[in-house]
Image (tube, rainbow, N blue to C red):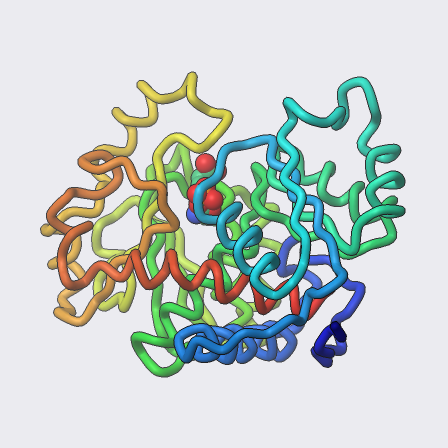
Amino acid sequence: MKAEKFKSPFKGRSLLNWIDWKPEEISQILDWAFQVKKESHAGEVHQRFLGKTIALIFEKRSTRTRSSFETSFGEEGGHPVFMSTDDIQLGGKESVQDTARVLGRMFSAIEFRGFKQSHVEDLAKYSGIPVINGLTDDFHPTQVLADIMTLKENFGHLKGLSLCFCGDGRNNMARSLMLICSKFGINFSVFSPKELSPDNEILEICAPFAKESGATITVSDKISVVKNVDCLYTDVWVSMGEESLKEERVKLLQPYQVNKALMEATGKPETIFLHCLPAVKEQEVTEEVFESSASKVWDQAENRKHTIKAIMLALI
Ligand code: CP
Ligand code: NVA
């Protein structure tokens, strides 16, 4: 059997975060995500990963990201190999650098979900094959492509939209959304307590992208920041690896919960609700909003698969 060719100018590149990607390059991958979604819904079968292999390294748990990588790589004829830290020596007995050099001799690509951003960067540096960040403490780049796709499906365009992230403004999701929104001209705001405001480093990284695209970036602990926004977005109050902070986070973030009153405070009946999931209901979001018609979380979750397939087609 002969593998189908997929033409992409990005073959061999890694996706560690979206900092070094131009908006038009991200748009191209987004177009491919819409294409593969259409193919999938039409029941088309393709074999674009035939003869290819990907190592899926997970130091942290996952439902959507793992399922998206495994199913979309496998159904296109590729062979995904799942490795948890119970299975391999990563940064323990064997250094990340050495693991990278071994995997680089055996696989077509690597996906890494874990704690340190430096680990995913070292895997890319030393393996010589494309590496995709499936979430670190700092960034979750594949997630935000699905988020942008869901926004486009709902509003038909991206430039000029506004999205407010409510909750832990320092986490990987807030940082990644700030990046992608600032590249696409989406006005981005964070509604969070001062203690959990995004740090200056990410604000400084995003400022020139926002200037270029015409987006605004606003950080506030005032509810008025949600006025007129097209999308309220939230994420868990306690990210993986921070479990010991649960009690203080719940206290601190209570006023930042996405509930009916906050949805109404946007003043726009067409505002949608997004969440990367998994959700802790009655914490960062009420059941009422989560289950409402404004909530697009299942389309968003499905779009993880199509965007991840598009990213893999682009890079591998
Ligand atoms: N949103 C997301 O990354 O989900 P998983 O943790 O289930 O992969
Ligand atoms: N901020 C969350 C995202 C989960 C997809 C975490 O890192 O646990």
